[in-house]
Image 1 (cartoon, rainbow, N blue to C red):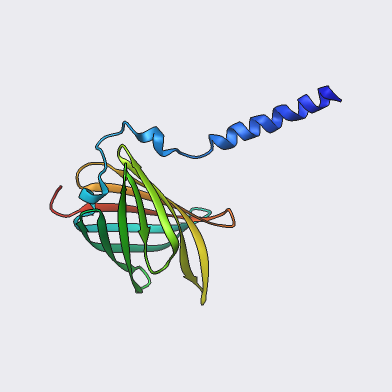
Image 2: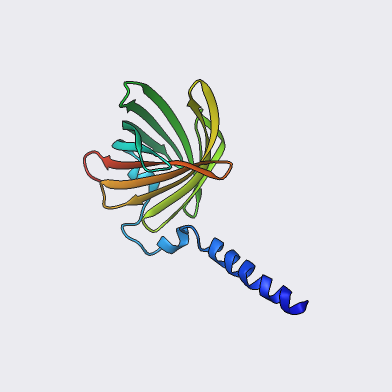
Length: 181
């Protein structure tokens, strides 16, 4: 009986170890350069180009974003103006707060609760729940959102969308800060 328990424990332990290593960790990027300071990068005008892909990788929608970003001390406002490939428009206004030690919180009208994030090295990772209109209904969708600063003007963004732990698709964006750093 003891031997059977040990044999069953080995695969369970291995699965637990693999699950712990399954996703990226923000700490792994602590030494990456250039160092990302959200208050500096998202201050001024930023343009973005993006796509939404479904869980099979099919491009479902393309979009552009014009962002007017301003900080006053530890408080920031990111006013995002979206233009989608189907002709629709949308505005999202993020209200960010720097909490110290690279930690941030954020709110927007279509975000349920509060977004929480952390910077390390050249990266920013944050999670939040978005109220997403789909075919006349509103779905509460979780985002695991990662941003990587490439240089003083360019940042790449990949966000994984899920509901009830089921992968729905991804949002991929390229940001370009106007006028340099």
